[in-house]
Image (cartoon, rainbow, N blue to C red; front, side, top):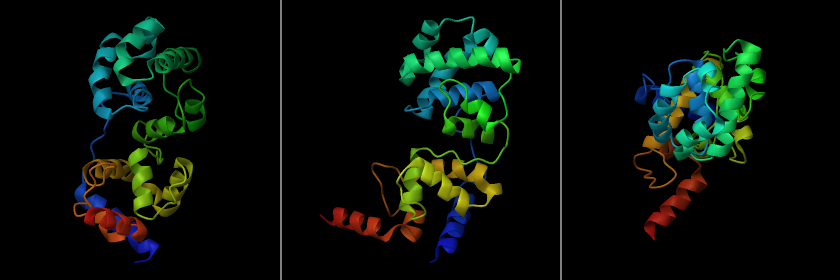
Length: 219
């Protein structure tokens, strides 16, 4: 199976498995999505979804957020990890949104990435999920699966993103990045991986990786 056929198999299988695609992080608007994505760095989406209702009950917009102190924000978001950095980022970006953007989340990669604690992946998620702009934010699941599917060399997330954008049609990016995340969680996890259940890797996967897994299972 050549690369083009493998890409099409991935697209078709994911569409079949996930005809409707749930968004992992609970939010109601671009601001609450931005905060949720920021909190998800090195934290599970499940944990973030447990914490954001507590934070948003006090402040679900930048104007209310800056009425809180950094320490108050930090105390609420502590279970998400990296709370000193994240709390400063949330407070700082809320100030900037008020000062520069009338409290609205800007709709450009450049403006988003200029905000405190907002990196390229966070900006990509917001652009994609809040504003419908084609983007391909790469998380650990996408990075792992693109390598397992022999569609990227796995060197770094920047390369994985570049490969994904080159291989998949632009109009499918916003759906595909979410479909791959759900697939990674359900069928191709980092731990407890069962190749028999992982139809995509089993069909199009890196042969050396599959051979290595077979060898491990036979031991």
